[in-house]
Length: 463
Ligand code: IFM
Image 1: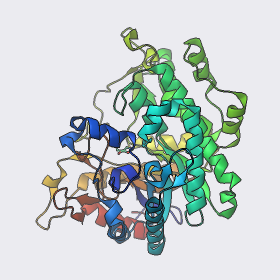
Image 2 (image 1 turned 180 degrees about the vertical axis):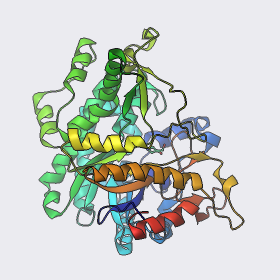
Image 3 (image 1 turned 180 degrees about the horizontal axis):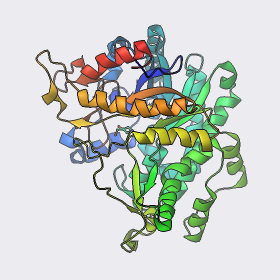
Image 4 (image 1 turned 135 degrees about the horizontal axis):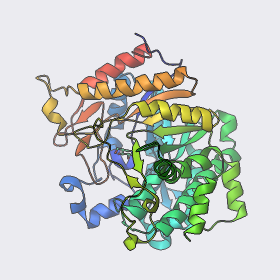
């Protein structure tokens, strides 16, 4: 055993309400529920979020399985569309309150720390239709109200909160690259929604502190998918292109979350290109004064960038790609099941970046993982999936994380995406990520080899 992690390290896993619960008894539809209802063919094998992994009905036995594989912490999200009956007045839905209370109490009874996130791409579709969703400051205020309600109801027991999961993915999916409903392509609207998401996070944090949740042992974070940008070469042009990609895809949310400000050079670009967001001083002050207590960092793959070689195609108007191109690095290690690059060394680079440029703020790996298509072919005679590739993937990432911890970064946990195979946006159940498999036909859940392995890692606090 040579990689021992800090005392009380979180060994856990993450999911989200819309991806595990199923739509049972929800008073509203989120954008994905709606999209599935109108265009089921957009989803792999036409499997939608209606049942998902049935967590709404099986949360007790599911959480017991998490305990069985040694997890001491678990992140999920509260669905706005389940908890709130009246989106304007914030009147709650009684069954939503009952359900989240039951999940929280079950976690606590098992000694599992619940981490509750408030938004995981699941905007109530009415708020898009009525107000244009995250482009609207009114929606920002409704979100802050919903957050306050959640803190009032549950912060006596939930001590770890997150405002958003991967806000940049909302921008990419909804406003740039068409993988979230309503598939808009509009850079200016993307830029406005980005500011509003940062503001919504800060306003929720303000509610948390106004209510005194921080005086009660509570901590609040935001969860960002950091894709470190690596330039193709050391040329000035490639480095400049890589820095711009880093500002747009990482720092646009990381800087306000931790420092309360946006990267100046990015703001200059938005102004020069006439896509600058609308904001006022009062809003900027809210962002300035309401930064996070700690960060959740989702890391899957790096971003390889080069200076533009082909002239930028203006057909879609302004896009961040005006300033860079993606670089397909020859010889990269790849997950053949998903097509994503595997580069565990980036865990260390993320750790050092946070240590040196982000006040050495406490953080944890809030998602990391390996999606595999057709995983059932790895089942052994006892019906257990032998996912040695996942064990190797996690081990490699933990080694680099450990090196970062030895170098002084303040990391306190590791969560795999995901505990039990869950539904995923357009890919539905194509790529499986869990420690525990789900048979879509029988609904049976079975611990994979990686789940048994994690039990040992957690028991030994390392490997
Ligand atoms: O399923 C998603 C999750 O919702 C956000 N992070 C990446 C996961 C795997 O693609």
